[in-house]
Image (cartoon, rainbow, N blue to C red; front, top):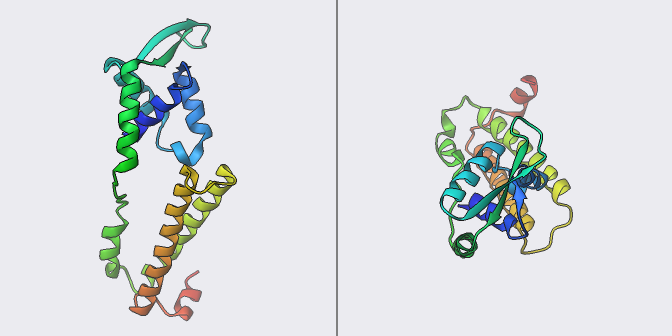
Length: 182
């Protein structure tokens, strides 16, 4: 749903080629990270079939066809954009990453490994946050970038709590055992 919203929202500014839409999505890094090229072109075709977009060809593109497809939002597409925008803003859809299930089964890891795995996840999430901050620059409260960073910060806070639980439950090897394993 949000991918369609992104495409329709970008086309509100005016007609764009699929290639240009992909460039814009790629330039926004973390905010549009799951709108990959193949998925974008698939959605553009579907949305055209549904009457949300119109398409015209322009000469001068590279490649075997020597023409580019340029997409515009239709009146039906504008109405769909408004509907999707309201729906996405008011609906809450929890994000399930699979980590919840893995956490339940954490005690099936070898002693000491649970803490190491969670520490590694924390390093990965922290690196992700650092990249997002570099890409986004200063973020205003209440913006998409602010939401993204708050979600990452919540993951880091949860990881800290999980590491404390693992250490308190004895699922982590003593420091001397960890020091010898590196």
